[in-house]
Image (cartoon, rainbow, N blue to C red; front, top):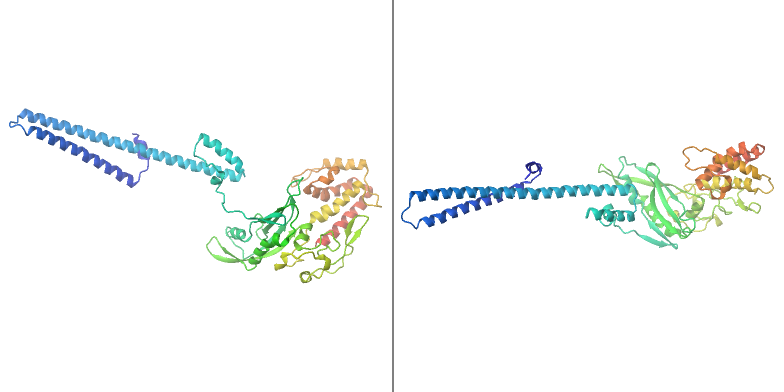
Length: 462
């Protein structure tokens, strides 16, 4: 028995009492054997009448030898029992120590899988390989290790698509209960937009996102996601769950702080931030390119057969108001009743026109680029020659953009397939340089169009 390991091992009081009880039992057993042997010897010698001294000496020596042998037997049994108990306790300690190491190993695997976003299919293959070499160290199913929430996800079928509602109230409560200083009032910015899933498919997602204006460092909240082959046609089914929660939050949100205090936080909707198509969708009004599509004033658009576009001439027209909008006084501007009418918001001012991508980069600058490249300005002879297009493309390929822009500039030939962030770079930074350096004779014309269009769009946004 290794005494050093024996002293290092931790033993409870129950274990010590168990050892002492077994030790005493062994002592009693050995003493009973000695007494029994003495009685047997006495019975054998009591039959003779004459007891000789040498016989007495012999008996005495025999008793002493038997007693010493019994004592040595008792000590051997005690040492054997203690050694077995030590080995058993040592094995239990090793098993406990190994189990602690396995727990730490599993925790490291779990944290690595969550941090690196490892798919469960890959984790399943990894666990199968590890369990062949180290059985029963990792579970068979990765969901056991990752402690995946077993709650059933409710996905409803609406508008020939599917909608998943993640919830808003519970997420706001969890966020506010984790911060140190809980504000007395929060403002929500809600974003709704559509995005395609694949390039060769009509499937698309329409997520409903939200962020807290006062807590800009917190990531956006996913309220719900709609999936289908087109935009949701039934606004009540799409926006109904979100509107219901927003109506409940108008009465405040009860929150328990980290200090254990209960408080009520006032929640209000600051704005619905959407692009032009989504803005017309959630308001239930005519599209942005319709004759009654202006969201801010009552101007009637005019269709141009030359440019095949709808224009809105003039700026001094009556503004739309929330009261008249709710009373449906704008005729063809209204299409369907929006669930947002149930909220205490301004349907005109709280849904701002702040879409620079569609209004400026894709609405104006894209038309200017195509007009200069293809000559689509009608009577205005501003078409670039092949030499000018090559010169512009060569200039663009050599442009060095700031490090904040993570995409390179492409040539003018791939204008139709440029990704949106690249289009913003084209339309906002590169075009001003091109119009100044490459086309001195048309610089006043180009600069005038850019300035006029930009000022009109900016005034329209404000």
